[in-house]
Image (cartoon, rainbow, N blue to C red; front, side, top):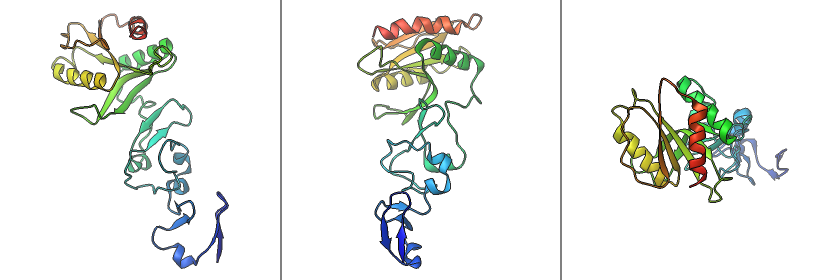
Length: 230
């Protein structure tokens, strides 16, 4: 029988039995598959980033890929994340748009960063070969300051509450060093009276904050000129 793919226009001959065998190709010329993510989850496939090495027609919904797929939030293109196929088809959404699990203080500081810089990501998962202890780091606030710094560096803003971070000095130190090694500027908002981690790097700075007077906009306005001068 003759077959024609309505998307690409390719035509070929095959039997129905052969089409249902092996890889079950949707189009042998494009190497797309019948059980693809695009076929079963068109709305999710719309978030499949064009930066991925293959299209959403070439992978199955629960496939284990050799790369971690990138996803772009259709409503907010600035929200880009990486997540395996099974986690997305099982219902995992955009971490940046999910407020569950984030404190009001975290949300307020993220909103202040958006007002100050024009855009900012919250809870972005970052992967980098320079990381020593972990393959992925979740950053409280990430800001692309390419406009301010032609070199294209990014700013990571971490908020350290005195209660939760009282016994996390080593963890905070390792995370800061990983982000610095990956080329990030790192600004830690350390709540009084937390001690300062022993870091001496021009791309690192600490800003003391107080729980009694949070002032998120004022704090971020202190961070902005420091980052712009690096």
